[in-house]
Image 1 (cartoon, rainbow, N blue to C red):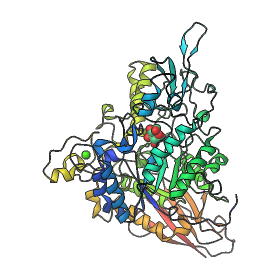
Image 2 (cartoon, rainbow, N blue to C red):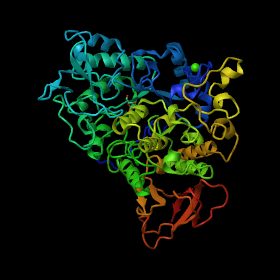
Image 3 (cartoon, protein in one colour):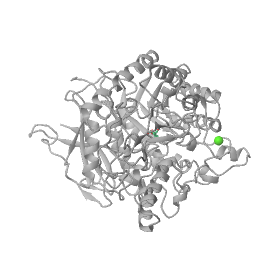
Image 4 (tube, helix red, strand yellow):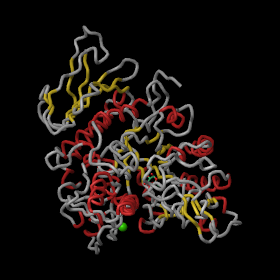
Length: 599
Ligand code: GLC
Ligand code: CA
């Protein structure tokens, strides 16, 4: 659908702050973040200029995949607190004008969920069909084989797990402890909606981040994936199990419920490079999802056969520009909406990936990325710790055994299975994880560099309680990068994020709702783009130096800005990530600037 003007909604110009409960704030000193800890930080969150919090799974779970393996949708993981703590958190957030989104994880459950426990008891169980069971295949020599060659999302194994008891395989696109629910069965779908959605909507939740939203409908004949990684026993199959034939029917059903509550949704949309396909989820007319997370930007630099089979910064600035261009382009001439994010709990820290995290550059890098994100159209997401410029844990001070994520250790296992104890290969794997692992974003937040464990359990410590080691080793740089030291420092990354978010709020037509166009695409060190309010409105030029060197920069001329040649164009500086006077045509290392165009 083509539209001439973009419809405004509160959630489009909102800023969403993502919280990872295990690692946000530990209120009772047991070393695990918890719900009362989150509640205690709501004033801090509000002071950032945030309108919505998205809380990663806090449900009852054995934590094989940090809560993305849910054993009971209607209860809380005990170390995080109780249902009552959750109700308090929702109420306290609302009283500050902050809305609450939960993570909706319904492609799969935990193998400890009562539904799966019942399903696996026998082939005649009334819940057998609630999960995806298939008989074995056999090779000509009689060897038992899984139903197809799909590779699981973690490590290099199969998506099928053999169940000795009943002599069949069950499907798990993620860990074997995360069996896929069978969405073909209408009774299963109704149970999912009631337990995972309505239960929480009734408790005042304002929306959901919808986990792996495009995987519910699978091709039921389960065809083999093409061989794209000949050295591997199982093949990447995302293009087959994502965006299956009944996806939109299922989303229609979900929407019938969500719309009754006015709930907002942002769906996670991997393996969908085709923009026309993305639009079917996110165009307003299609009424499927309000927003999606595309993977274009966060996948930059990933390996082709496996995301961690790559080297450090294996991309060019052109790749990043193209990825941003694609996600920004989604709203051009359409009624769709887009999102802005460079971090989440599945990604390493953006300062390390996209700038330079050495001490002399990391502050500048973090501020430049804040300029970039605050100037892009779409709903803005900020991940906990991003606002203080957290970097990846360094290789020298954070050994591989500190990495706890299943995605990391199954990757290392895959490398070992293939290469044995080959030191060079293992070191290569560690280097890749130091650069890209999900662990980096899951390290406990450093609230105070002077307190024990970076202040993660500061409140308990102050109350005189015994404080345990955090569940994951604290950040080795907690004394240098932490909230307390940045709170009152006007030159801090934190102060700058507040400033850029305010700046964005003050110019929504250009920065939240405007059209985006990249200039000087082939410049591999400077990123320049134009934002323009709709219907020929105000324009801004954003320029970002992605290099460690000072760079001279030629401002775009009238023609490049889409103005008539004779126009007397002036660029009025309105924001810079460097304090002090505008140094004209020389950009400092990792400087980001914004100019309003005046004619
Ligand atoms: C999503 C989550 C990720 C999780 C996976 C399986 O990608 O963001 O953390 O491991 O789904 O639920
Ligand atoms: Ca705790």
